[in-house]
Image (cartoon, rainbow, N blue to C red; front, side, top):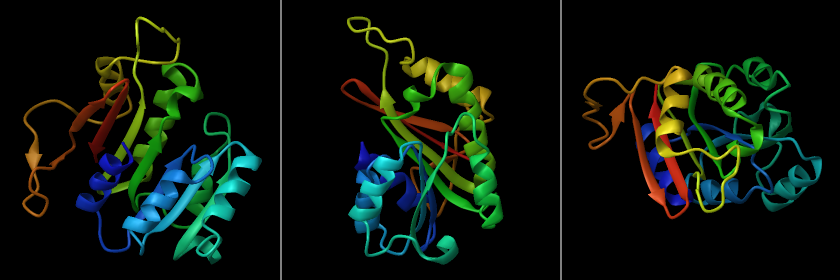
Length: 198
């Protein structure tokens, strides 16, 4: 899943992409991103101070650069109840983010209303052509969980969050095979990955 997400960023961004990770946890995805996109500017959000401490240690060589003009920064926020996007607005990132990523975390935000809220906020951060890409647990009727959803339900949440999926995909000549303003998805066992371009 991480490789799939990184591939979306690589094909939709410049040499120094601005990346926001939602519910970054202990920084595992940030570490993968740092290896594959060494010039990235990254801000990861998480609710847990303990996990953020682990993430800062994991990426200590590049963490906490001033104003995240380069390097990596980790910030604490409740994505549902805090105005976390304000922290990015203050840094001039609103409408300038190349990619918003999340891995195996959005189901922890609550129901569809909470997930749609955060997905809508993420969309507002993206620049034109930026990508929202996430992987999360899919609904499993053998092990049902109230905050896990099917592929179709994820696509409906994305559409309700402002990502268009209607009509034929538009192909960007500079990124063959990648469509803009359309959702693409793939399954990895019980996980689904989704990418929508603004």
